[in-house]
Length: 436
Image (tube, rainbow, N blue to C red; front, side, top):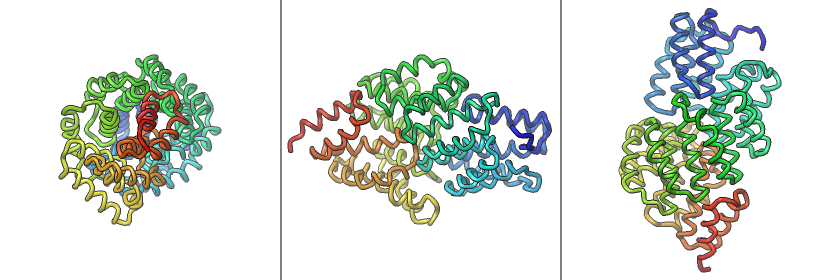
């Protein structure tokens, strides 16, 4: 690395900041410990405030967004380094819901400062909310040649590249890169996560379950901040293997007990329970219990992805008033002229309305509406695996609407990529059984 001054802080505080960034980008450990220690070591340092605000902003929780804005109110911009200043500009844009502009600032900054690991993760996460995870392949490929394998954080940077490659569809190279990164950073969330995605997207559920079980000590540690999402991936492998009871056990015994009541985590049990219910599993009173957590999110929601899942949970819990409230918020966001307005108008609202049709057993309308939104589906945000919830629902709607040709066409697409999926093959049997 170069000798540029990245943080305007004394040497002790700089080390604490680096510790916090490592925990933040590994998604392992509590970055707030390093942030607090940095403040104690140098009360004049401002990067601790910027980093803490970033962490809060990326939750997409309205209460945390307010806290983040309050934290950076008193930042003295004249004292910021270039790295700190660019992070602050991007952070303010992100807090204003201008995710596209925030990523643009970070991308330009990273061309000059490819070693800013925190900025890399913030750009990656924001691109994820925009449905553009694949852009990380380009961003990381620009930066990696500047890094040495001996640099602290090289394995984290490599894991960003691996995840971007997976979302780009380069599954073979993504798997190789991510397995290498997992060897360098065994407790890292991103390399384990990227391999999980590859195994999911290439239809290898048995390998996926083995990958999870073999690495259980690394990802199930309580210091792993995203282990709820990894349990979600493990449950998906069990679903694809036809082991629905195992997936439901993970929902009941692991996911719910670890989940925090913020939108980014609540989406995991919602999408999982929806899949299982469409496969015939009895949800019992799980929807009502789950929606109690969603109730805290109904005001100030700022993410199309989260709001779609919130709408699904409200409908499934038979809480039409909550659904209407979420839909009204979506419509306000679609009309406000902001950077996310198109995503709400062309994607989030049609999906939410289609899910309402599905719940009412109007499968013809649900199927047609979801088919219409497919060209814009990436706008909902999330990964390819997460957005599959909508494609999955369109297929189930087609089967229940007795539309044999559409159902078979959608099944063909799924089987082309994941021929060994027990679920896809069961969908094929159901589609073939339909009369013309």
